[in-house]
Structures are given as structure tokens and as C-alpha cells.
Image (cartoon, rainbow, N blue to C red; front, side, top):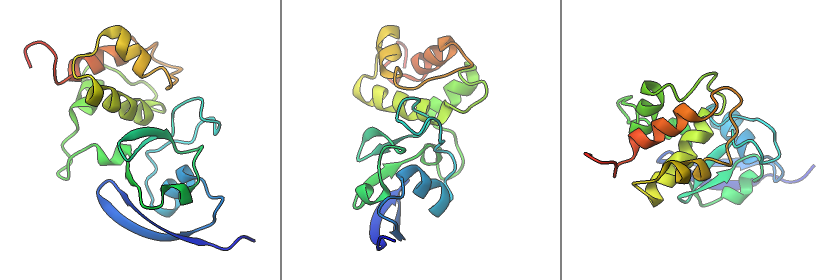
Length: 160
């Protein structure tokens, strides 16, 4: 059995230090060690996007990373989107209002990919949104309402 490694990282603004097996995936670490179940385990091959998190500001597939690779990193999971008072993030509100979720399995990864897109382009076109979320698979919605939700949440939209 491989020796455990100490990692220190910040998740949703909170610092953590834990001993981990070198081969433990980041998604399993978040779910099992930190009790953050919002990062979903889907395909475990980096294809579906359900495990999408932001690491140092960039989206990553947590199923493709080992927890030790996040040592020293700052992570944002879906649990970190809402405010400390429970106030939903504007993207979460828009997904709710515009019915951008159905079963909800893809939603955490979809939200984090959309957040990255809006950080880079506060006035995205529908095409840009479709490209920005293309790494996140949804089997329920057909994407139309997801695109509408991201358009509605865009901080640079007309009239905002």
C-alpha cells in the first residue's frame, strides 16, 4: 500500500489539510473526505462533465485528477456558489427561473462551466454559450433552457 500524502488546499474559501492516498481521485476526495457531494461522479473518464470544479479559476474534471494534484490549489465546487447566507448565485437563480435543470445530475458541472464562460465573456452569444458548455452532457433538458438561463444570468446582458 502506498504511503499517504499530506495535502493542503482551499475549497470554497475554507482551508483543509488531509492525508490522502496518492491514487485517490479529486472527486472522491471532495465527496468522501470533505463531505461535498455536489460534485457528481458520472462517467469517470472526463467526458460527461458532471465532476467539473474550478481549480485556481479554471474548470477541471475532478474525476481525472488525483487529490494530490490539488495540493496548494484553490477549488470552487457547486457548494461554494451560494452565499454564506444561503442566497443563490445569479446563475443558480437563472437555472431555477428558466427551468435549466431537470434531473439535476449535470447541473453542478454545468453551473461551473457557465461561470467560467461568464467570467471570460460577460455578454456571450447563444453560440458562445453552447460552445462554453459543450463539455457538459445533459440527458434530460435538450440544452435550450440551460442556454436561456446562462443568457439571463450574463452580467453584461442588455439592461443589466
